[in-house]
Length: 179
Image (cartoon, rainbow, N blue to C red):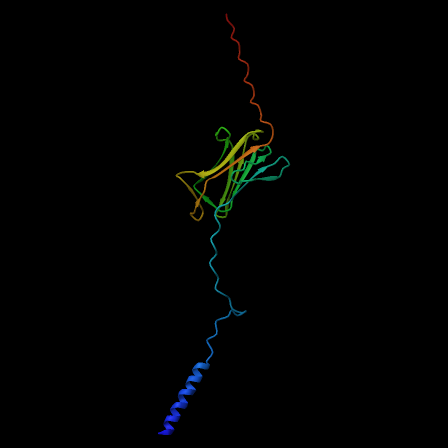
């Protein structure tokens, strides 16, 4: 009986030592030969716009779109607006300082990667005058990007450098001859 107690105590102690001495399971470390799970691509940032104009030296010059700023540009007849993502239900218009839409021949290239909108004016913008480029909703109250996210309306005022052009005087009135 003594032998049985001694044997039982020995087995219990050995079992406790074996269980206590077992190392924890190693965490999985990436092996150089294995590939890790690929994360889903992050959604692109919200729409950003850039505005350039054709300067007289035949290069494109950027117009600042910072709020509360009215940049000066050189006289031009070509503007180019770019967006960082595709747009849906939008329109682009150029207004003079009397808030009248300017007549232009527009060209647009659209894709989910962005929009390139070119405004070609029949005559250069007048020196000294202020203009505003507006990007807003074609229909309804808002427009979206290609992912369906709302895009905030863009109003980009700028002024053409130089002295303000005086309007041409009206032609003299023709005198009627009395018979």
